[in-house]
Image (cartoon, rainbow over all chains, first blue to last red):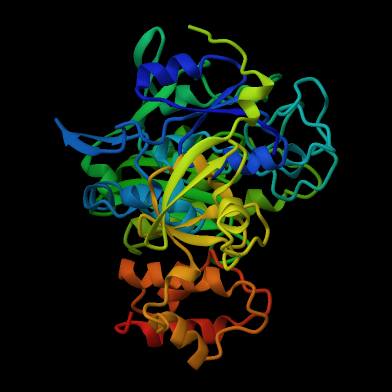
Length: 327
Length: 166
């Protein structure tokens, strides 16, 4: 690991000021940052320790659950309000990483987790995300784990997280504070597609700090579920994952939310598939149709074509589960 | 407001740090790039905590920080100033093995032993968390600790046996 200056932020204001330099990185749980610093992918000149700022509480007020950005993944997953109001969020968190990592990783940091793309993580390869304009060795490399949705000619790296997929399905909002004041953005407007600039992954500006995640305590979200498919039963990233929430009245789907992970460059909200589910009869036919719509834009490379079928099956399985096996 | 670029000296300067380490206060001066794992092994002389992958993938470096299991290889030492850290050397009391240590011996829950300190620290925390009622739950809770010898069957048996004794 290269040398760097370490400073403890005494307040959020101080953190924003110290973090505004392009060479500065915030340190919360450290689980992503330290790993990437060892790989020489991240080379901060200054590490700003924000881990002791008072941003770790979970509160429910006026129908909104607000999760402090420094709440640990494990604490959020086992919070009774989160588990009952947003099962998909708790399930997504518990399906990610290991008990040790969940104890360290924070909710805000988890959103910013970097891709597991081998070509990004190994500096011997060309990567437009790591070094803009250098090229992408994943396009014609070993791309079994790479994205089939939201890709560009510059990048096919998969967004690795689970939490953000659940948050996308539940229309969560990200509370941010920066030099220009506080703002709240919809999760859809937080993550950006790679396009020509895969190094830009979110709309966060330098020095801006995620302070909280807000989720509406919508009764629909209490009937949510996260289903993750991976190479081993635990402690592994998704090959495909699905977050969904469905309200069924009789056998009719009144409302539905659907998002995909493990197959896209960003947490992937499948709105057209949701539209197809609304008003349909809950059952295999509607689930399969929604799954096909959700993956309709899929573009595979040499080794990841299987993800199209895998993700569709995962969608059907998740919808069947959340609809109580009625179908 | 942008601040100035840190100097080379600032990037190497040792910073004082105090830990509650296995029940005793211990002070160090460490450079920012020192991980908690390297502090334990190379500054505190506690080599029971193992460096396996050093990248957060194997669990051999698991320690308890403020009672919670965590990976010491993915933590900067300086971020833990004032924290309570327990390593494998701190589990036995008055010369008597911790019940999880004893259960690992009873059940032959290791072969080469390299992953064992991490397995045991993780198991101690898993039992304290109280969410490992079944063998499947133990396996899921312990999935962050890899054993290349494949002693998993006996590790699960040892943890199940230690439940209620720990």
